[in-house]
Image (tube, rainbow, N blue to C red):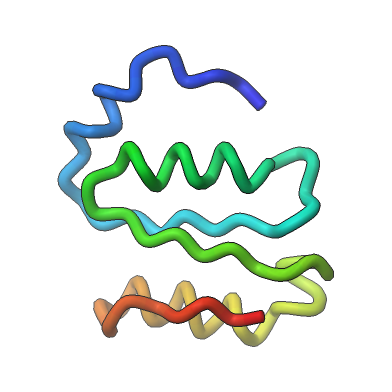
Length: 79
């Protein structure tokens, strides 16, 4: 993971953000996703169970991203 030098930059973002992480993913640690979501003022964090975001969770990801982009209510946390 690349450290974020200035979190204040993200605090200035006014667009909604969907931050997606997967448990046990060493390339994209959940802790980094939590930090990112905490710095973005209008962020929603979803942490998926292990198994492959595009394999095991394909349908849930489609619903999650589609709902976010269409402005539906805050997405749940699919397992």
